[in-house]
Length: 531
Image 1: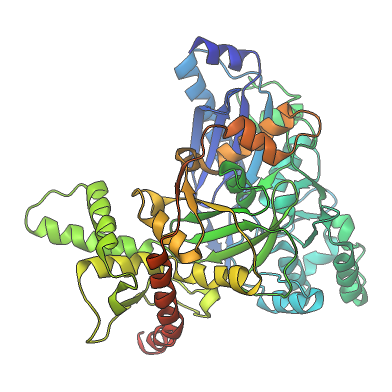
Image 2 (image 1 turned 180 degrees about the vertical axis):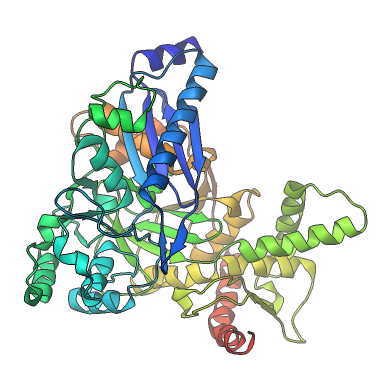
């Protein structure tokens, strides 16, 4: 305890803050990268005039509250005030659109990643660049505003992401980490900057509009992990800490997106590695050795915080419907007067799935509470279906719901693994699906025919990953790569628990996957006929 107090008072502790979609969290780490204090603030986006947004007051009140709680946690645990910090890093949900005029005034309410309002722009830009531009990307929002002839576009002097905005206000620097930048506009992995050829194409596309800006002039400067991204100004220190205790001058690392912090937190920034986050939604981030041969709407291309190309497969649905079924079993037990321990119930039902047939006995389900772009389904209709010949028992029932939680992900991963022949040495799994030991982990290994590891620290999440990136900037040796820093200094000795794919499970998942893809027609029929 006295060592930690000394670390804090000597200004060697490092702070990571992340703005998630429902929570803003601050994590303070010591010199061994161990979390020593934290604070968080819950917040909600709101739908205003058809736009999902957070107000500037939401942003600043949330940031200050999470920092205030962190500082209080430090004082309660270590009987000292948080005055000096070694380094800070800010991260947030990627994508979206925050546009400002030359006075620094927000021109339109923050448009978050959640908005699906840029379909025309995303399609046009994908065609123009021959590069997948998803609807949530910042450039799609800008171009859609142009197509909509929105009055504010001529006045744009700077546009950025949420993390880029926070960083700018606290340091005065209009910069962005390359991982977050890769969700604004395509990155050239060679230059680790916005793709110059595509920037030229965009300028030519909008030239006839006569805007007083060129695209490069209004984008943030791109930095890679470890680079100096400025210092906390006096004004910034007061924005963060209203009490006036925190000293200015703290070095701040490049702001990042939540995908990048997830990669750092799971030691998945080296080529041929990746991570799968499986909870309410599920996404895989695979660090690629080369560019893909084709454009796939199912695959987003982003980068690691140090600029390596990443193939991202994102499915909207994962465990929500599975959790609802577990809730039904709880109700059943409680009807008999049985008091239910939810951890035990999840563990029992998940382990039951291990007793099922390799291919789930011919059962089929879709846990679609919302639409699923990978399979082309526009809205959700959770569905369970079987034939009279299917083997309908509890083990197969649980197994099919665990398999289907990874169904859409597998469709996207098959593009990378089978069509593009991407090679992966290891995947790290994190999130709720992996809490029951050896079940979700083994099924993911079967789905992608790749070893899957799970680490205890993976649960620390994005703010811890951001603190690691800030620590890397502060403590790295000359020419030390981020992947080496993470492997040698953060995760050394923590390889996690690895599961190899079992041949019969791989074959069973392949059989299920063929049924899953063919059965999407049933899901679409349910959408048309179940109102």
